[in-house]
Length: 114
Image 1 (cartoon, rainbow, N blue to C red):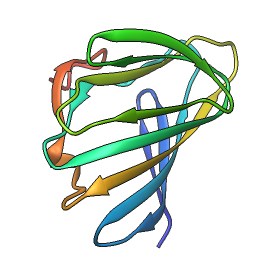
Image 2 (cartoon, rainbow, N blue to C red; image 1 turned 120 degrees about the vertical axis):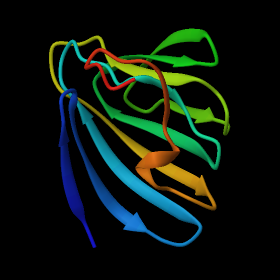
Image 3 (cartoon, rainbow, N blue to C red; image 1 turned 60 degrees about the horizontal axis):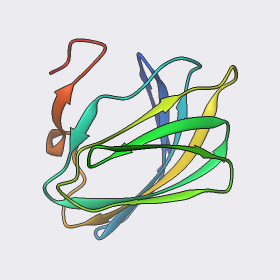
Image 4 (cartoon, rainbow, N blue to C red; image 1 turned 90 degrees about the vertical axis):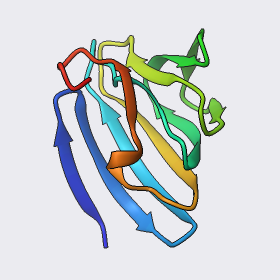
């Protein structure tokens, strides 16, 4: 069931897609960041597996590195930025009752997708 989607900031691969959770491997290119966003119907757990990143989670920005993990409750505004010189990779586990891309509310976006 794995599939890969390219994005302007990198790519994601869906590793598992179950009725009550979804698991993705997300790769962020150097100097790129995802949109500042939130979700109504899911929370997310992120585990950084490679690289140096900065994560905004409800207006608090903090640096993270491989081995660190972040919990993002449903409704929190969040984004991740690759602050290193190599690709950053993290595993995202989504928990909730709906995982569609149309559950993304974008507040800011470097690629004009707001």
